[in-house]
Every structure is written in C-alpha cells, then in structure tokens.
Length: 200
Image (cartoon, rainbow, N blue to C red; front, side, top):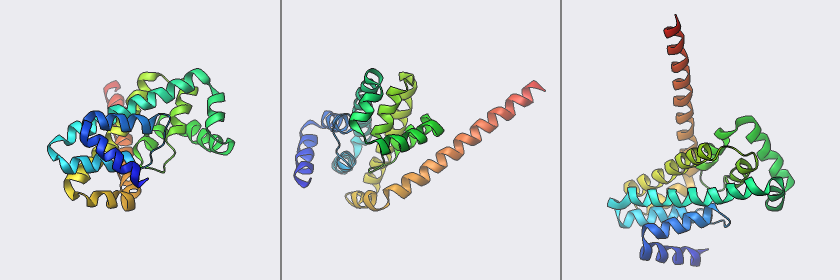
C-alpha cells in the first residue's frame, strides 16, 4: 500500500488535476483504493493551497464518472451483477437500508470516508433504475462535500490533516451529516408551513 501511495503521489504531482481525476475514477469504478484518494487530495492541497478548489473539483468529477460506470453496470446487468460482486449477506443488509432510506442512503455513504460500504449502493442504484440525473446529483453533492472537507482540512492543518482524517474522519463526517439532515428537514417543514399559510 505504501508503494502505491508513493506511486499515486508521483502521478498526481506529474499530472496535477488529471492525475486526481484518474485516481478518483479508479477508486469509484472497478478498483478499491481505500483512503488513498483522500490522502492524495490532502497532500496535493498542502503543496498548492491556491489550487484547492480545482483539485477538489477534478477529484469529485473523476469519482462521479467512475460511479456512473458502476451504475451503468448495475442498470444493464441487474441483480446478477450484484451477486457476482458481493456476498448475499452484504446485499441483504444494503437492500434493507436502500429500501428504507433510498437516495438518502446513497448520499450518506457518498459522504462518509472508508470503510463505509459505498460502492454496493451505487450498483444497487443502477439495478433499481433510479433516474440517472438524480443519481449524479446525489453522488456529486456527497463526493463534493467529502473532498471539500478534505481540502479544507489540508489548508487548515497541513500534513497533519491525514492523521486527523484517519482518526476522527468518521465522527466529523457523521456530525456534518447530522447537521445537513437537520437543515434539510427544517427546510422541508418550512416549505410545508409556507404552503399552508398561502392556502389560508
């Protein structure tokens, strides 16, 4: 793993944004590179803080394109693809969450860092034939927030952001997720209240 990180750092340093795009694409499609993409984003931002927005955008774009490839595999291959990739137990647990929470489950796992089981929900979205525009929107927002947080941590803490993300990443992302959910629920309730007021 350390060798791969060194190679990935070299690729990112040589290619810049396109290198981050390639790593995120690989990680989100048919390869698993747990934590490596986040680590490289942080490392690149510490080298060039002024390019943080560009690096985050390229990483997010690469991840979304990779997810779209997995979504397409699920869309075309159906449940057979799920059974080829994952155990029956994982499929059952993911299906229960997906059935209960739908796109919210996809957003949650798009935002959370590894080892959150994100890819199975991407594939399941294709199998369920969720509209591709809604799928891309949810994944784009989730991944964009995740890599933006990594970039902000890199600007704030430098190289120490890598250790911070490894030790406190999940609690931090969970708290942020809770904040977004509260804001979302509050907005929905406010809209409903406003609609009632207008009707009276």
